[in-house]
Image 1 (tube, rainbow, N blue to C red):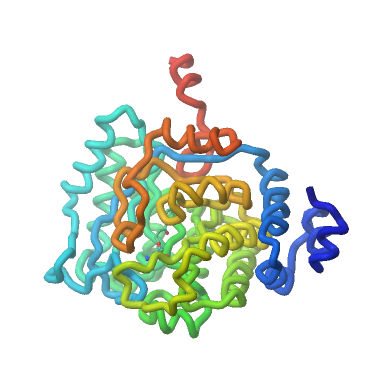
Image 2 (image 1 turned 135 degrees about the vertical axis):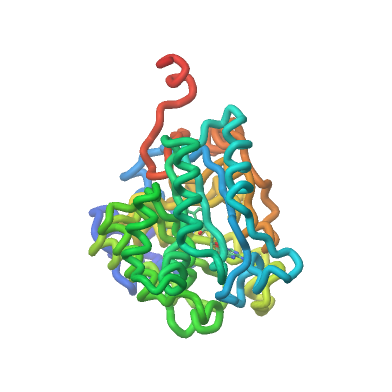
Length: 380
Ligand code: V47
């Protein structure tokens, strides 16, 4: 499949050799992969790197997402989820009881959650103590449920609100049960693009510093990139290189999620050529290049909510090894026009993985593989 002559004709000989030898690709190699016309040649290299790490395993998690509020002080121009104040139509802020109700409802089904994923907007008036109590109550309800919550952006917001360091915020949340942080809020690190799409959000240096602080405390985190808006391929490669560099230093990134920008209800208006059906190819290529550039991050997620259930399984052949999970309720993508369902059952996820030619592996929030349902029953 990785025929030497074919790659030579594409001008990708040295990249092919590096991938086969497990060597690191350079910034310019990343650009060459974006410039290569034959997307299947790029995909085959990414598949090789994926299979070297994971074979044909594809991971999924039985999880529930809870967005506690969409009221946010950041005012990012791209974001269809956020509301500037409680008074705006469509604004919501869950009470502690409403958060717990969602958890109780999920627990009443046979799902047996292996991850609770909690994120929200940067609310102007919710103190850190509210979030500590929330984590403590969730932990009291189910001490075995891994809590994945708060992006680096929320951590910085709590630190500003409380006038304490981000490290102290992380220590307090960890004490209350935080074990893992989701990868959102990274958007695109380039300062100029960031100024246009999210000028008030934690900047690139802060986002990366907070990830490093979390890692130093033993809190694993994910990382992400929002792409397909104003950024160029250079900006994408720069973003991936900054994540790779941070990972060399602190080592706690578990999974990278390339998030294709969904354009509905956004104040950020894109030119026609950026929003057409050709974006599917760009999304697959970006998954593949991410796998090839991020040689030190074990997992690449094809997040089915944003990629859609048709493209996400194809992305498994382009370097991704994780689909995320059952989800149950999702707002961020759906308020931006995601056509996917709100959730998938375990059977649907496993069928999707098997029928795409892969082997499903159920995992928990920190990517520890779990015994499958049959093994669980037999062990009881
Ligand atoms: O931070 C916001 C992005 C992120 C849009 O860590 C958008 O396991 C596309 O980070 N179109 C939230 N993307 C989602 C996220 C995530 C999801 C699932 C799993 C994990 C994980 C993380 O979504 C935001 C932002 O980067 N986003 N608006 C949009 N219109």
